Amino acid sequence: MLIALLLHLNVSSQTTELQYRTYDLPQALIHTLLIPRTSNFVVTVAQTETLATVAEFAEQYGAIASLNGGFFDPHNQLSTSYLVQNGRVIATPQDNPRLVGNPDLKPYLPQIFNRSEFRRYQCFTGTRYALTQRSDPIPTGCMLVDALGAGPRLLPENTSTTEAFLAYAEGKLIRDALGSKQKNARTAIALTPEGDVLWIMVAQKSTPSGDSGLSLEQLAAFCRSLGVKAALNLDGGSSSSLYWEGKTYYGKVSRPVKSVLLLRNCQCDRFRRV
Image 1 (cartoon, rainbow, N blue to C red):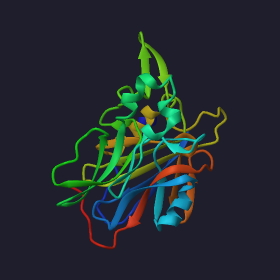
Image 2: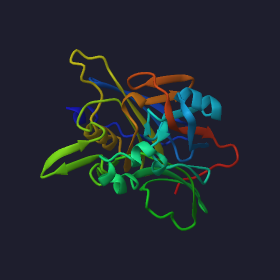
Image 3: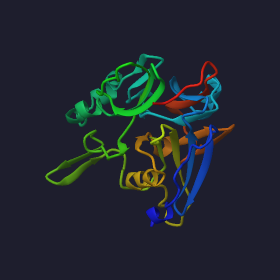
């Protein structure tokens, strides 16, 4: 049913203008922001010492838009995702004692430390965005400027098991860190074949059953319906939030977060994605 509702919704970057759209589905209201490769805007990464709302991040950094980013522990307010800002590592999951000291997570730490991330490179040919695993090498002729870890990747294939979001024993599911099969508020970032960047925030609706939002499979189907080539799930649920043109849209509730993606005007030069 969901896929049928999403036919013929491919995103387009025929102009250089930012394109904000909403998709009103029976169980979710989906907000998207398309950032064309020919626009004069750049996607960057930021985090805060404690926690802050996406609106507070945007105000602090002078950004036109912000989207909640990587995972964090609300108890100690430390990141559980890798973060690179302006070429400098500013957070790693290894630095979170509640993560590395959790005996239940010890078998999965190698996979957790190599989860997928959004990257911004500065290359000889201009700015380039990618969705990669943490261990993937930096392309020749490029420098890693920003990175934000999250996961799993939704497209071109789902990496939930390889990144230890899901785990099975004797054919039975024993771990589902994100409630992947349940409907919930979700956040994602995607890349189009043309090199455009797409932000996605899935807001829940008030329904009689209380069952609203999208599962990760449904989120992947939505991304696929838009014609993107790659998509990465970001921190979702109560963290899901998008700030755009002076207004904040929440997936579920108003909640401060640890890290964000920012959209900033690049005055210095017109950039390209390759």
